[in-house]
Image (cartoon, rainbow, N blue to C red):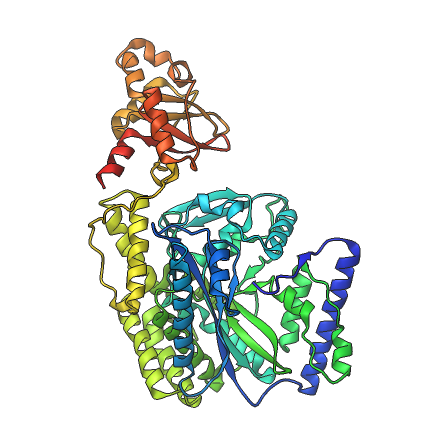
Length: 622
C-alpha cells in the first residue's frame, strides 16, 4: 500500500504544497528521460505477496499487528485489513536461476509468517479472495489502525458523497451497500515487477496490456465472494467497485474509475502516462515532502519523486507504470497487479515466469500495437478473462481463439523464446513452464474452487461448505502441489471445531417474503408451494414489518374471510429479531425463552436473513 506517513489532501496550504511537488516531479522526470539518467546495464524482477491470516476455524483472523510484531522482519508490512499482510520480496537480476531464488525466499518468508501465526492461534493462507470472509469482517473495527488506510477511506467517502455500492453478476448476483473501503481488503494478489528500459517503455507497456486478458484467463483463482459464485476472477470487479470515487447522478458523465485497465493505447513516454493520471484523477493523499526534486537533480543526485510515487499509488492500473530508485540509480518498471494470490507458491511462480517470458519475447512485429489491434478488443479480452477465465474466447490479431488455443499456439512459443533470450536456467524454464502447460490442459484455481464448492453445497449448508473448502485449500498448499495436481474433494464433512458461531454463519439469506399489503391467500400459497413455515413481511421501504407463521395461519386457511384479509391483518407485529453479528448461543437461548421457531435477522432495520429451528438441527447434525 506504499508510504504510510500520509494524510488526507485537504487544506489549501498542504494541498497546494503537495501539488507543487507533484508538478516539479513531472518536470524532473522529463529531464531525466531526456538526459538518459536511468539504469540500463542491468534488468531486475521483483514481487509482492499478499496473504490471508485465518483462525483455527478457517475464518479471518484479527491478529495481523501481533503477528507482524512477532515476525519482526522488514520484508513484511501491513495491509488494509487486520487479516492480511504483505511480503516485499527482494529484487534480483533477471538471469540464471533468479526465479528459483525468488521462490525459495518466498517459501522461507511464508514459513516465518506461519510460525509466528501459529503462536497466535492463526494460519497463513494464499487465496485470491478468502472464501470464509463474511460481512462481519468488513466492519471498520477490522481495518488496520494506520493513518494511510483511514485517510484513504475518508477521502474516497467524501468524494463519493455516499456509501460504497457493489453490483457484481455472475452465476449468482451480489448487490450490497457498505460504509467503508474494506471490501478492497478481500482482494489478495501476487504482484509482479519487471524493469523496463525508458526507450522501450511504451512498446512494453502496450504489449503488457495486450497479453493481460489471455494471461489472466489461465491464472484465475477468485470465483467466490460472500458465498456467491461470481466471476472467475471476481477481484477485478470487486477492486474497481470497492474504492470507486465516482457517484451516481442524473448527469451522463464519462469518468474513469481509479481502478482501471485504461481507455486507450499509451503514447509518447512514461511521463505521458503519469501526466494523464494527474489530469484525470484528483489528489486524495498528500505527504509532508521536504526535498525539491528539481533542486536534487541539479545537485547531481537522483530524486525520489515522492509526490509522483504517492499519487501513482492511488491510481490502480492493472498494469501500473512505476518509478523507483535503487543504489542511487533511477529505474522504470511495469507492475502486473491482476495476478491473484495462490493457489500455491509454485503456481504463482509459474505465472511469474510465463508473464516475464511473454514480456521479454515480444516479437518486433508487435512493437506498435496501435497499428495491429483496437484497444477496445484488448480491454474486452481482459474483462472476458475476468468473467469466464479459461472458458473465454478472445480476439487476437484479427483472429478468434479460445483461451487454451491462444496460449498453446501463440503465447507459449513467445514465452519460451523470451526466456531463452534472457538466459534463464533451463531447469527453471522447464519446471515452471511445464506447470503452465499442464494447467492449460487441466484446471485453474477458479475451476477447482467452483467444482468443489458446488459439490460440498449439495451435502451441507453454505457456511460449512465454505469452511471445508478453505480447509482443503490450506492443506493442499502445505503439500506444495500445483493446482493441476490437486485432487477433487469428497462431500464428507469433517467434525466441527469448537468455535464461537454467530447468526450469520447459520442463517438463510435465500428468502421468501411478502408485502404487508399483499393478500393473506398469497402468503398461504407461498408457504404451501415452498413448504416453509415462516414468511417475513416487509414494508414498502424494505423494512421488516412483521412475521407470518404456519401455526398462526392455520385458522385462516380455507376460510372465506381470508380472501379479503391482507397480510398486515394477520401477521405477528411484535416480533423478536437479531442482528447477523449476534452470538449463535444467545440467539438459540432467545428462541427457547420465547418459545419461537424462527428469528428474522435484521441489519439497519432491513431484513437480511432468517434463522429457524431447522437451521439449528442441521447445524448439530454436521
